[in-house]
Length: 228
Image (tube, rainbow, N blue to C red; front, side, top):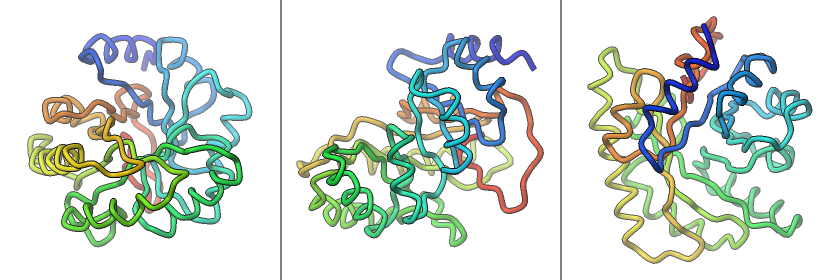
């Protein structure tokens, strides 16, 4: 696949105000650099250790988003690499990000991950718990909630994802209409290779695309589909 060509095609299709996150799990530094050359400005990584190896070479010429589940014991390293964590889904994780950010003298931007399909095997805050979760983490002064992220369940027909994106957008708008400290609802991260156009129709302004840029990859056992 011609990576530069695919990136340029996608960027041309994105409406003004919508940003592309290139999902680069398992992709080589050479492939990522081709995407950057074509105009990618945000890299999305699933694992801290893999991101660390790539960050060492690529550095800060792009922004880095954590789009995989983040373990509490990896937060310190994650904050050294990433510009945003899109997958905050527990008070414990928020507290750890806040604690380390405080030591560093920074306020770190995060998105709350929504389990819009209410799937037991997936991480994310259940839709009915989002408001109470936001209220709970507003007490942390060194993190700033800047929006919501969802994957939605795996669907065979991309149109079937629509209700889950609609639900997440409604939550986003509801939270946006309220005044919480340390909350500014700016980003709605939804949609992957098969569903990003639907996500944009439903209000997404961050789309996570991997396969659509780099071509198919070999599935890993137990892999998560946070960008694809």
